[in-house]
Length: 603
Image 1 (tube, rainbow, N blue to C red):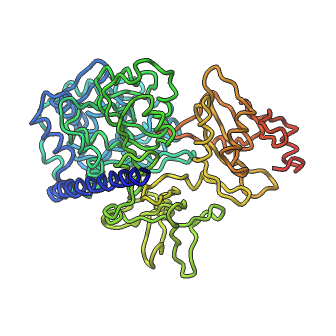
Image 2: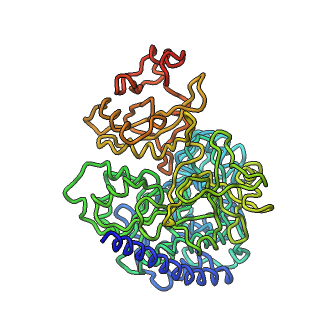
Image 3: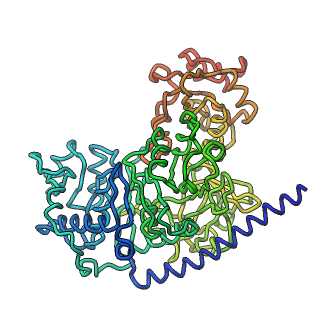
């Protein structure tokens, strides 16, 4: 019976592989045709407008905008940008706009007039905002509010448009009034006739958990079409239908491929200004949502909400995104029903995308021959202490065997280019590895440790900057955090290494958040960690917070936690220390800290 069960599982995986390959080849031909004919997302959108002008395109709050509405409004926005020659062909227009219909009208407008867009994170302020704007090289900024840096922007002769109605006394021009006075008739195709597949479509800013300044990435039209192709592999099973509605809570500024696919598949978009775990399912029911998108910790946030009798009362059939952990994946399905989860792996600037098309819980993709042919990659041995790949006597990198974590690197080629960071050659070169599998080759360093199991499934292991070494062993922060959150009242956990003077490597520390009304069970958590983790991997310090900070893309932030360390006199949060003799976590005092630093307490 067991053998039969294994055979059935492997047979279903092979079936999924075959379907993926057939779908891949079919869509590849379509995208190749698009590239040869300079067929852009604007062409696709206008084709949809012509075929289904009255179909709902965007749902926002209680408003409905059809494809024809979107076309007319984006035409007005385009003419408002062109007025008085403030924007001309080939210019870059910077967006500092939240999730709202105006973002979409502007996004379409910029492409219609042959310009590119720089998409800023609306959570940044002051110097960071000014830095990101300068990187784009733009002279026009479309904003909600930028009072902190407005004087310097105006000094640089930047034209600033507010999405409010009227011009303000501070020098910001009102954009809505300008739009209203513009014609909504179609724009001349000549405005974008200079575009080709290598033309710049937009600038996208990377995000991370390190606290470093965001880096800017050039995204040409050809790459947007390749993203379109890869996403179609997942959405192709989602038929074009008037009943298909996707729910967009992820920031549009992240160059979400989803919006392009929604246009391509003629799917209606229910747009949310900002993700809200408490309103998520009510919105899904209100708009009859059939598809959702997630990133980072979004799925965990949903699982952490109070349970309700109508948790399974919805029409959602598919969830697409990246960053869901295996334990959250199971909890999500058990609670919210049989929703197909399509997990992706990729990076803003990367040249590789993996996709879990077979539904294997916890995996981010499959290692099949077609994917290896399209985007050649390898997992290589990495020295955590030295911070670089291990090489053999010939100077080449060493591939890891199946079942062992290794650094994911992807070959840079014409088919899979790495375009690097705009105006930052030094950082671009840092992401390249030379002489990896043979002399002269060049690979993109993803910075991620991955693992391929015996069945060919690919799993995310950890970020190389997050993995730390203690007692001569590598500690995966991701794996330790998964074990900690198995405790039913711990809602969130992020694990990191902190330095202890006089000791090599970094010792484990965890910041956690508890469910409302629960207290930290020091003995229970100690026993749990003792049962599931080796001694070197158990966090010796625990910090309890009301909630954990996340980035704009819902990734847990660690840089500040690492910097603050475990000093109870400087940290207002409750701190605990793992006491091996007491077999529990005890409140961390300065006496314990001094004993650790002096070596009286062996760690």
